[in-house]
Image (cartoon, rainbow, N blue to C red; front, side, top):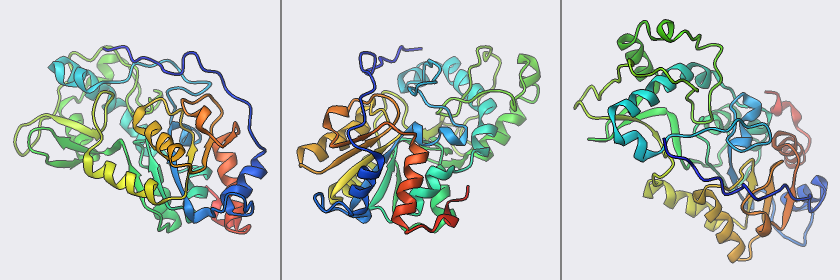
Length: 309
């Protein structure tokens, strides 16, 4: 498996630039020097948004070092695809059971210009449905609940694939001595599992092609239509808020760089360092869920009944 270079290796967490109260004044339009209310902000989220839902991150303070799958590795050999699908098969039940946390629900209660998420857990979509949010949500890196055929583009529900994999590998968990309930999943839904050589991979039931989760692996490209919609949201917004992302991946960092280049205000909220810290006009090092709940309480004028996870 390829080694993923960590662009944050030499970076340290900066000090907060302002108090959270001052930053929320900016986000809600109370601070008129910026002149942007809640509806004018595009929001970019990362793995730190979902840690309170039990989904670990790659680069947070308590993150365990991991080697995520690359598209080159996935395509290189059947053994690599078996390795991915075995780990994903074990990890999917826990990923599927994750629920939106108070941060997701708080953000869905706010009438922001749109949410562009780097996460593949579907929790922003779930919270938007739960809260009745009209703000668009773009899954920049795709979603684990969909599986795509690389040969013909056929799309399948992840639960169907899970059932098929279970039929093909009825004794796999017993053979490798694991209990899927007890394993810890990675941010992309798989688990740390080495004995995968005997795992049988499902092919596309329509054409026999290769099946892959509908997510953007490291080294892969964001589909053009999805990227255009994310660009539209950020271009039309008056400023950008980054929540829980280290901006280590260029696909997210580029939105912040573009906003800064256009002199739009940049707000970054996460408790670790990011690649965009020098571009931030406002920087909070608070926990993301706490910050978003405070923003939501201010933004919806104290209607905190909506925020019960």
